[in-house]
Image (cartoon, rainbow, N blue to C red):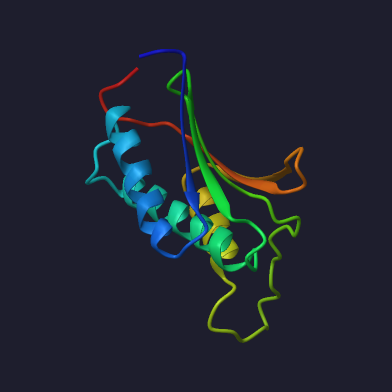
Length: 143
């Protein structure tokens, strides 16, 4: 396997694109050697679902598309990023706030931490942002 691999897909900011993003990520990770039936594969699919949902729901129609980036470096670290063109960054809600939604970033951060990863947000040159999740790459039988 190469020292660095990348895969990218850009999808319309539409609710049906969330499942497309999840399937795309699952297919790429399988090509890179991650078995589909593992707990970490399930977790990554959940993370991409939450990030894609945020890109669709919280950009208020100001981001016509979102982009999913996958980067695998030296079979050591997987970076998953979801980019949209809306300038507002994700907000962490106080624990005391009672809402039916708005917990996606809390879930994502907790899942990343559980697997030894981290969450970060970076601005794009166009004024949007990318939410990144970095996770250790631990594919059994590889490396």
